[in-house]
Length: 286
Image 1 (tube, rainbow, N blue to C red):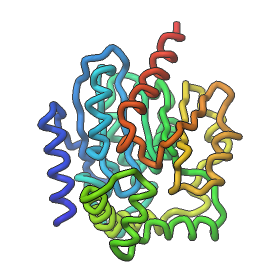
Image 2: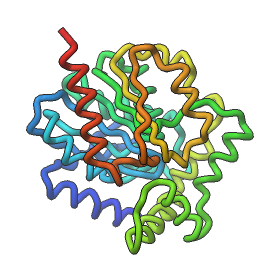
Image 3: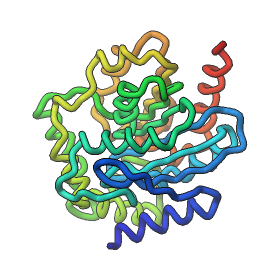
């Protein structure tokens, strides 16, 4: 109940600044969405969040992007935020099913899709299934790179936050928060990773659920990948996977000082990079 209340407060704060809160029914449960018109000329942009997070976590980015895009949409993945919570029965397949059905109903024009961490992998999967609905991909520290079983097990232990000290160390690898805010974020992170649906997803991760080189090679739309020099959550082996298998037209940037969640500490710079890439791609189209 505490966690649900925190997510509700976050969503209401975003809604007070002009976002509509919607619920979209899917075959595996309803999806909560933040949706707002923008004042810009760029196409709709969809933002997909990472493991244990929610669409409202993108608040620093949501309002900035509204100045440039015609519409900004941020769903909560199944079992996250205020979307339906299947608890310990949640699986990656259900996460993707809910996302596809929700975006099929929400999006009325081909959109740009931004994804961070798990949201990056989900964005690639969605693009594979609905290429005609995606104008381009914007990925920040995307997850989904292949790992052997032993390496994956070691990686997933990163999210097993047993105490406040471990949660603080985790947050220090996510962002550059300090003072009281650092402790608040650490407390919230620990609560989120204790959620039954999130623990179920972690158990469901397996080598066969990873993206393949073919998944990346098949990306025909404009694609930007941002991988910060201060990335400390994803294994070092993940960046070479993206670098080696992205198609030639894709762009890989390694911004200095970016951590795993640059929207928390570098929202202005991140917005500028995303908008510049989108404008360049849109301007180059006939």
